[in-house]
Image 1 (cartoon, rainbow, N blue to C red):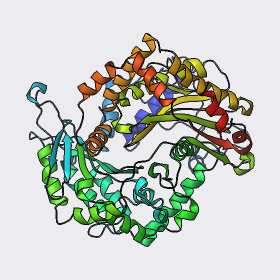
Image 2: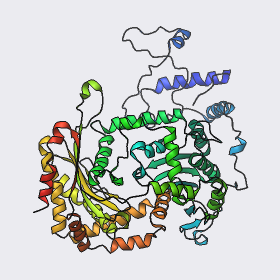
Image 3: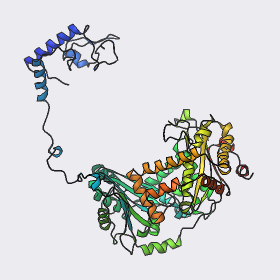
Image 4: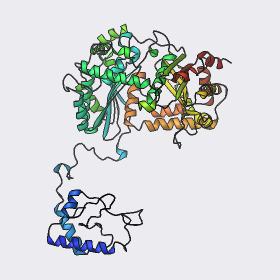
Length: 592
């Protein structure tokens, strides 16, 4: 609080309170609010030179302690109980003079409910949320799908059925570039990407974009009253991007920085490089679409240009390969906004795109297995100031045939959950994997194992299930690969326990239900399922499939995987990567 010292009455009050404070300073009990952990009151030593000179006091020299003369009462909350009611009233009146009690009109609480606040219905009066799907036009086959959440925030976006698997040698990396170019300048409304950022800040929202080997996603998370503005921004960035040369060059520089991050030891870059390496090793061959790099190399960035992006868009961006997905909106409103901002006159022609797609069709990739080793340069962290964790990372994987269409899709997900894992610094507790198989049998058993974790990667025609691990100790790299391989072998030769299976099924079901409570996950799930299957599987059906997985299913999936050659990947220092067992040796472990 600040107490004004104008007026003779106030000055008299200040002198009285200061005198009383000085007299009682040594004998009164310290306030628990002021000094909860102190046994004596601290000296006040803060002041400025100008204040000291104005008060006619000398400025302390050397190590002398300066104690200013008190001008205001230090016991502003009257913990000592020395103020009378008259004193209190005088202090309050002075304080009230400086307080503006007039509320801004836009913040006033009125008797009328603002129009953007939805009616407060009883839950029994609301319809149970369900996925609703509509095809806007039989000619272009653009689909809109939504699910209500009855919340005040909406997530909506567009998911496109193309990715880096459709790239050619001359445009490698164009999907990654398109992801970075999302929500930049547009032809009609935004001259610069910063205008979209400013607009989203005003509306109370955020934009996202992500690209993969099979799909490209644009997304906006926005306050519900501002959904129409968000839909307009989506339409602008998807249908009418300017793709300026300076924007392309800026994003190519970002792609180069990301390449350097992946090829330096330590951090998330090495984890991304490990996942990319597994993909390249699993589908080897010149015409293997799933085996193409998603992140372009520096020498490939030179061939990317605005024309490259426009040509790829004209070949693959078509209404029948797009789904407008939303979570937290009425389906009728979504249809109305889609018809307004994604009208047939604004959409590219499906016929021209289909003709272009025939020249570059989707070709099913065949799993081959193989190895990928990425030796990283050694960095002197003391001189460079760069972070490196000095870990050697390895991964071992096998194929799940037929990918998203596999009858073993759910058993494979249960198996991944059963294996679980994490790293040596996991916090533990329910849901943190402390009782998963990899945690119990690797991380808790081998001191040198820094991490061990199961992973899956699914595509239209094929998928991968594998385990990754890391260690600081170069002498234990071979042992790390061996213990990962041993886990695969035991899954194929021994049934898992009832306890392990029950825990894995419960955990997977819990993860599915918990994730779908998120708008972002719900929006993405329904959109991607429509693109992949043409429908959305309900939650009850999914949970029933999880509950029906048996020990025999787990063992059968493991045995089927081991019939194919393994995929091996290693990322780390040059000497450490050389210590990883050869591919032929690892393959031989599974032939006996």
